[in-house]
Amino acid sequence: MRRMSLLLKLIITFTIILGIVLVCLAWILSMWFKVYYFKEKRTQFEQCISNVPSAMLTYRAKDSIGKGNEKDIDRLQTVVDALSGAVNAEILISDKDSSIILCSKFEENKKLKVLPIISEENMNSLLKGKSIEYVNDHYTYIYPILKDNEFQGYMIMTTPLSEINGQLHKIYLIIWISALIAMIFASSVLSLFSKKILINPLAEINNAAKEFANGKVNKRVYVKSQDEIGQLADSFNIMAESLEKVENNRREFISNVSHELRSPITSIKGFIAGIIDGVIPKDKEGYYLERVYSEIQRLTRLINDLLDLSAIESGKLKFHIRKIDINELIRLCVINNETKIKEKAITLKIKLLGQNCYVSADEDKTMQVITNLLDNAIKYCGNKGNIRISIFSKGPKVFVEIYNDGPKIKDEEIRHIWDRFYKSDKSRTNKVSSGLGLSIVRMILMQQGEEIWTDNNKDIGVSFTFSLTRYSSIKIK
Image 1 (cartoon, rainbow, N blue to C red):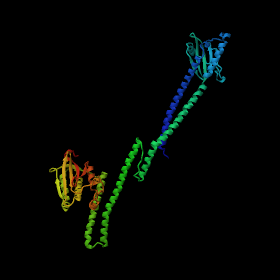
Image 2: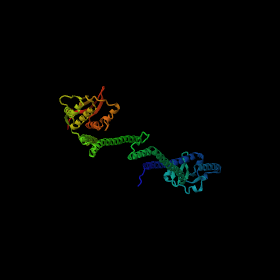
Image 3: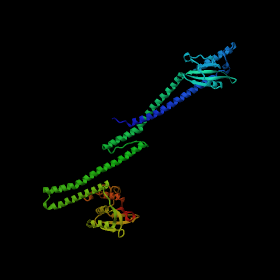
Image 4: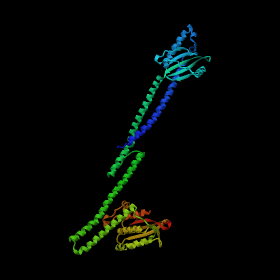
């Protein structure tokens, strides 16, 4: 089943609402015009009466009309006939006994067949000088004729209701056709503008999302609008940039992992193949087996680092926060790296904070942080170089600084040193570093709510400083 488009739904909803509004408005206007038309008709009849000389309306019975008055009767007939044509109504003048004195020349098929019967109540109204009106198959207006405040008769003006309805139906037709045209016009305008400001931008975003699903992560949408659609487009572009960055990082990560894995595997394969094929002399096999073992250790370190990084990023790595002595951890790390320090004749200075300095942290993970930073300092420190480990506190925080007098880090490289597989000196560290150590350090500290940063010293050397929370400043659960 084909789904209804958003534009069609919008137009149908708008048309229904607009239709209801216009129908109600048209009905109200129709009723108003009907009342207005009858009011105007009554006003015409009243103006008609005002145009008949009052002296001409005071003739009583036929026997009161003498020969001398025939001229006045003719004048009255002429006036009544003219007014009848002007207001398109039949006009009759009756005496107080309901005898017709005079009637206008009106179309025969539109004339009253029977004079309206005036009820006693309405007759009393006429006697008091009040006009009355009827609406049945004719619209009839009856006006009393008074002389010296005495009732002399009445004047009847009547128009067929079918003729009035005919005029009203024309007005109704104009109103309803106008409402229909307005509805069609409004729906067309809505369709045009909705397509331009709503449907087309949404379609562009939808198409971009489909291309994203097909792997085109560089796709962007360009919607120049300050409304919710524009905000949606901006959010989409922000999401697209993030996804593109993630995708690029993923590809770079896979490329780096593949390269790092291929290098030791190729070396191991070459050495073992040489031993099997007899290319390597028997007295050299031990040396090359040591090289194979070294490459296997390197491969193991890389895999372990990858597993640690993956566990930290996925949140699966559990931290056991407890009270630990940071001074003791630093002593242990120095002892573990004593051989490397002596091989390069490095001068190591340690400045601890008191006899014991207790912090709240995960002991194993903090040990890994210190080990990685110390190992990094040893690698970049030259022979007979200097390394300094200092501990200081500020408020509830304890800070550990590890300094080495090796080469400074270039300003453009400082923000990249925390990236996975980044190596500032690839030629020197390719065999001994996986490029994941600093990334793991930063992730471990961030997971514990701590910070780490690096600074180039003014003269020479680089220092790495990270924070820990003093044990006495929080309650351990």
